Image (cartoon, rainbow, N blue to C red; front, side):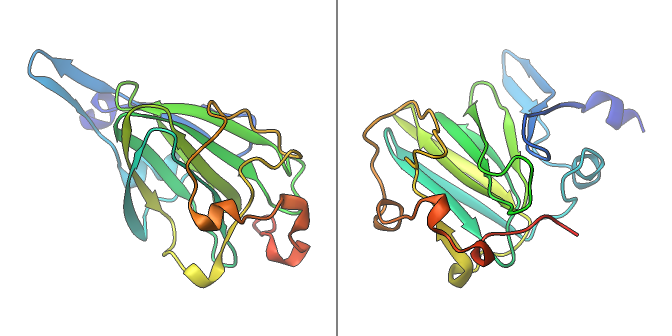
Length: 193
């Protein structure tokens, strides 16, 4: 199909299996720009779910840190991108039997660079806002189930995430989060079958 050749995207693997950085092909001129932010068959061919169960929008001010969140059972995969501003986005492998358990990757996503980050099921996710404001949208592979949600401490020393801020604004649930090693093994997701 001609459109497949025109509306392409670059998919970059990261050090964590399944965590992907997507750089859509952007078409721009003096009027503005256009890019395809989602195409189920194309994203599925790149290793992500071809369908989403839920779309979310998040708006935050500079210094807000949200996360590190995960859901288990019924883990959520997330495809994120920024519509306004800039964030530092983090994925942490928390799958019990994974050879990369406890490792993380961080990526700057912004309205300017138009990058997307895919965080697969079984990973914890969080971000902090590094611009005055940030408007983020993300697709989720499964519905949000508050009874299955948990939070890992953003500053867990065992993870050693190098956040670009030191004194973030946190929600009460994020302030009260446990360290990864404090979670019982059965509370963490396993590797997919």
